Image (cartoon, rainbow, N blue to C red; front, top):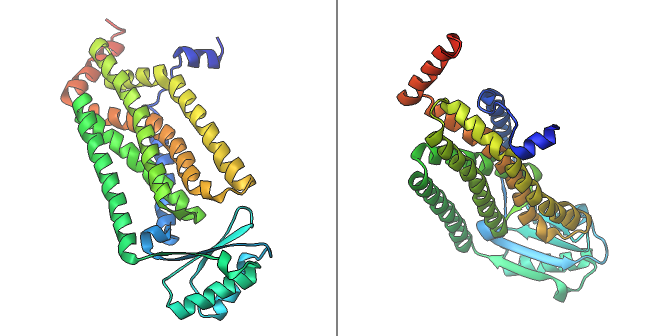
Length: 319
């Protein structure tokens, strides 16, 4: 039977737990890159979080970012974030709050360089208090989600499974934030929504595996915990990969075709978090959460005794 056929039937024999050092090393490298990017470059927080001023205008003149930056620097605005939208058909400037006189001057400059009229320049102002409120509520939503995850998995399965699941979720969150730091994409409320969606997806995939492990624990009395986890992982591997691929394809279409090729820049904030998060969540469910759970459980006295009995039987030729 072909490898694909064995995969579909759940007849593979991949030693997920035995190769955990390899998986954990890969995760460690990715996490170091993500955390390093976060501290070196930082996150490009949208004005919804930091507060500030957003100016957006059509760009019939085809002004480039460098031209707009030079014009703004001439009037004393040195720290503006400038983005081309819809493949250069519009331009957006984000900066700190400006006094009324400087704001009028900035609007005139944006209109002149972009070739639009002053009336076409839209102004969006968000105060620092509101931005702090949005950030606080986003963190509260994340905290409530993680707390609910721990309670649910501890009730439905067991506490160590909950902790392994949380470790996988933190893994996914850090990698996603690292990608945002590397790319410089703005973090907006849409990004937060996408991340919460992704964490829920990752959790679902992890719980499917853990539920299969719990099912096998009750019936496989002659297997060690490592063997049970490997058997569970191999039995649900095809399902996990199929679910992930069918999720990544439409999200990838939104990200690469919709936003990058056709210039629908407003989709990028949401689609990037979904794409990276789903990919990271698939990896963590298979290569992080389950091997980590096995490593923790094998330290329990019950499972250590079973492992020792298994080793004795193996040395004695199965007698």
